[in-house]
Each structure stands twice: as C-alpha cells, then as structure tokens.
Image (cartoon, rainbow, N blue to C red; front, side, top):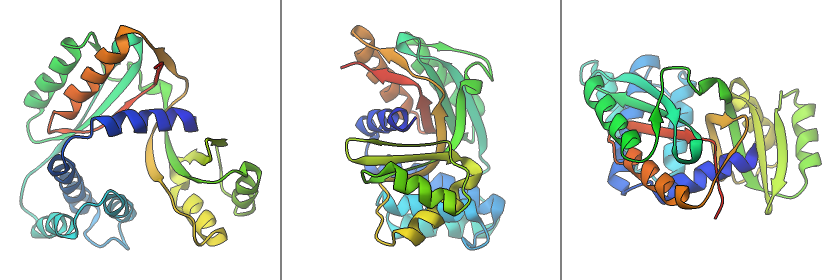
Length: 240
C-alpha cells in the first residue's frame, strides 16, 4: 500500500505543472472548504489540514489568506465537485476529482484526455470500489515495529505500516488522520512528514509497461492540464 501511494505521488510530481497552477488549485480548494465548513481552522479540521498541506507544498501565505477572505465574503464563485472514473493505458484504474463552475466544460476536457490517450471513461462507481479512502503518512525511518507499537499504544486503528528505501509508510482509515498524526508527533517531536494526506489508495496494483508507459505519462499530463482537475488517483505500477 505504501509503495502504491509513493508510485502515484512520484508520477504526479512529474506532471504537477507550473507553480501558478498549483497555487490556483489550492486557492480554489481552500475557498470551497472554508465556505462550506467555516473560515476558522480551529473549528474546521478539513481547512486546517488543507492549509498545512498547502504550506508544505510552499504555497505563499497571501494565496491562502486571499482564498479565506473570499470565503468570508459569502459571495464569489460557486463550485461543484465532479468525479470521473475509468481505465487508463495498460488497463490501470483511474479516479479524477474536480472542482468546477462549469460541469459541461470539465466533462468535455476530462473526456478528451481519456479519448486521446488510449483510456476509457466509465460510469460513476466503475473503479471507485477498488480504492480505499485512507490517511497516508510517509516519513524517514527503519523500525516499523516501533511505529506500530506507538500507534497501538495510542489506540489508533491502522491498516498498514511498512518500510521501503529508508521511508516508513503508515496507512490508516481516513477518520484516523488526526489520531495518527498526534500519536506520532507526541512520540517523536522531531518527526518530518514527507507525506501527510487523505487520499485514495488502490487495493491492488496494475503493472504498466512498454509503450503504455509513455502513453500513461501523456494521459496524466493531459489531465493535469485541465484547470478544474484537483487530484488524480490511479493504481498503475510503472515498469521502467
């Protein structure tokens, strides 16, 4: 599971696009979360988590503050969530999450990314049941047993703890996000999370190799070029 998440994270990093696009996506998401759940991070845990993630991704403070100020105004844009599911190159499974003020436009752009890159757009629920919404933490370390003990002592429900290449991955139900973070931070005050997020983790991986690798990269890049796309999740295990 941890490796699966790292593979996805690494592939997305290759096509993350320019900083302005990243800032725009964070600004839109912060605005929506603040408008829906309140503008105070202490009272809106989703907003607090999102701001922490934005800061880790080096989003400037003025981008965060502007989005929250816009949410305070009560007016502004109305965004709808949209989720698209299907199969990518090599028959891997893909989930695309969007925030949009024009569903028709977003559907057209996402569909084109599928059609032009040997991918097949499915109906809602096509592949979603093969992913688990999970809290994922990745940080340097070697002793998975010690981490598991810390979490068990804190009565945290954990799905998986594993070590690979000097990095420990902890995967837990998404409802356990703050319990996991608190337990690890209390036990190891100097811990440095490379990843701390709620995401969709695939239940199994699909090898993608040969010519499908280049097509897959083009496919992900095409999705990332859509301004309304916020996140792309997949189960591709790239065979370099």
